[in-house]
Image 1 (cartoon, rainbow, N blue to C red):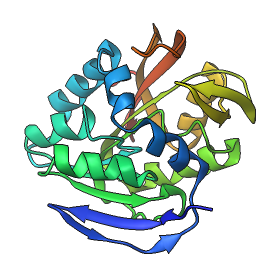
Image 2: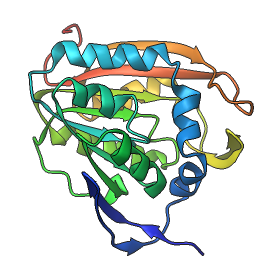
Image 3: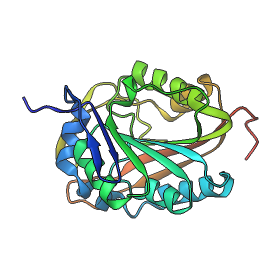
Length: 232
């Protein structure tokens, strides 16, 4: 079986590789490569969430981008605004593309579930559709770890497909996938249970620009570590 880096560190063209087992998500996103970026490039909700962050981050903030993909739009937009971005993805193909497209950011090919995350390290965390191939227990545990990795008052934007499914075998842009998710109210409860205040949320329908894609519901949560639910 093909093997992929479990911990590849990429910064300005420097790649350090440690061999490890290849997560299923890496197989999917290695195959999709830049097609994923093209398919989701028209997402107005994703762009709006980045604008929300930009209005609230202090200059030079430290941002973690979980499931960074090709680096666009998230890392590219935040780095262009002067923030220090660390992108993490299990797909070495995605990390390679991201390092070329957004050289001013830092990227690491690693499984975030086993990646050390220091407490109170980041001013913001972005999690765009990166949970869907994890179990429910893994999703909940990761969100709790990401909450702890935020500095007090730090911001988290989480986007997912809010469906009540577990280990569902389907297809995504022509690739076989096994998906687990929560219904919308349970996603919100998971985030609150991690100690985050949900400042606002947005539900949209989006159809990726790909011949094998279908319309999908999407939920965007805007959160803060500490504060109140009504704070924005």
